[in-house]
Image (cartoon, rainbow, N blue to C red; front, side):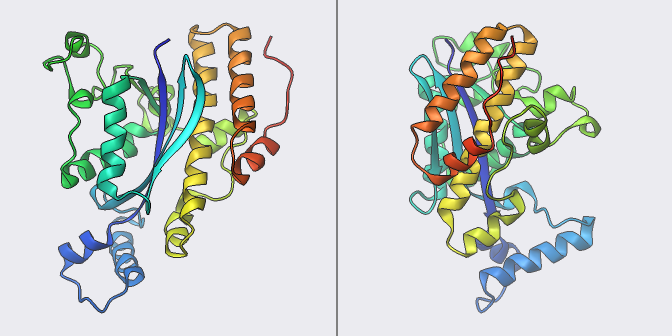
Length: 267
């Protein structure tokens, strides 16, 4: 099978970048620098969501499905710095050439990875290959690559299901819950910065990991709808995910499974 890599990132304000761009005094705390940036954004457009290039990546979580089974892993700070997190992610694409799957990856995760990778001096020739690369199958990438919007080598489920209409997009949490999956467990995206300030780095990682499992489960159902899987195969895939999670350490998986009751097969 072609391996599938579902990914999600978690970010915090790039405080060092904000200090640099705004020439802020050193005596301001990180919290004060971030709050000043939030206030400026709210004054500009009514939201405190920072520009993509000012999001510092602290976690990339992945759900990986291959012939070897299903696994979940993360590349995270503070164990890794941002450059290492991004480089290892793109190194994995180079080595495995999986189908990338995301929820709003085209609107947020990938643009952030592009900007932050550029700043950090990351190399990613396989990811950027659009048919002119030196890989044996580079010609195939002219017609199906990671960066062209309507290609499937990266499947942004939110974008695709909405037929690329922003007004039709749906949140992952709602869709997962409506399909019988747990949805968000433990925290929400707006709590990542406070959690980071409180030193709750593992909590951020755990939250990100449950998000990629939700996304994989939704993707599995999408593959059923698209005709890639039979109903029996879709059911077996859910069983594989459930059994794989039971073997993983971490209290977040116990919470996740508790919110995912056993159900009758789709058959």
